[in-house]
Image 1 (cartoon, rainbow, N blue to C red):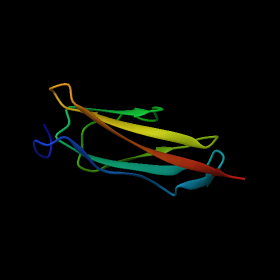
Image 2 (cartoon, rainbow, N blue to C red):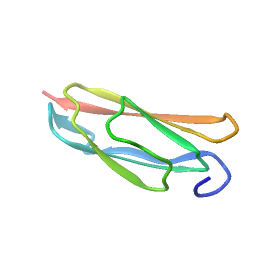
Image 3 (cartoon, one colour):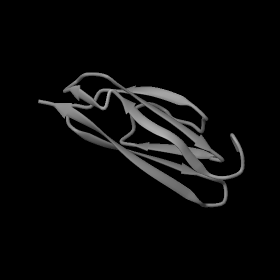
Image 4 (cartoon, rainbow, N blue to C red):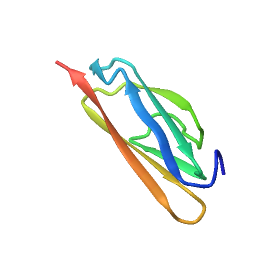
Length: 86
């Protein structure tokens, strides 16, 4: 497992958090003690990392949910929302 024993989401954010429809935002996350990581809705492939960023281009205000799981069946989740400007 990466980064230690205790399962946790160290960071999860979008920059910018508000964009025009079809624009790009960068979603970054960091997890600790995870064996797998899932992002819903999916954008690009994600994996356990202390720091990883990817790009998303939502067409409407979208909530992204990050879930990290360890090998023992435990999981933690966190959500962020990317808002679409009028």
